[in-house]
Length: 158
Image (cartoon, rainbow, N blue to C red):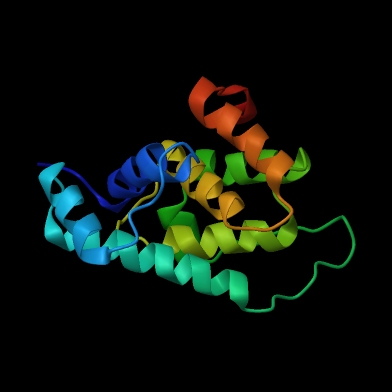
């Protein structure tokens, strides 16, 4: 069994958050269903905590980005965990209006909150999708990101 937190998050999105199936509100029932789906208890707990932290970040007032031009410098840890392709994806998404400066920072924060040494481009796409889903007023950006996730467009890399 090689499931990680992102696999649990993807399962939750595809089975509950897409708006077609109502989310199970009982945490015990949800944990049981995820366990029956084959996810380890440790990864289930991490995924649920990750989602709780994401929801809490929506309630926390954030700084409004000033201006439209910015240059993001990545720390050593960020560069190690988000490789060149992942950072390129973030630049692509920001330049195409899918991410704002503020949502980009939230994506980076949520990516680093994962307990993995490296975050792949595919995992980062899902993180972006989940962040946008939880941000009010981001419906158009979310729809564009959902299309990117499901159509696996890779033109941003070059």
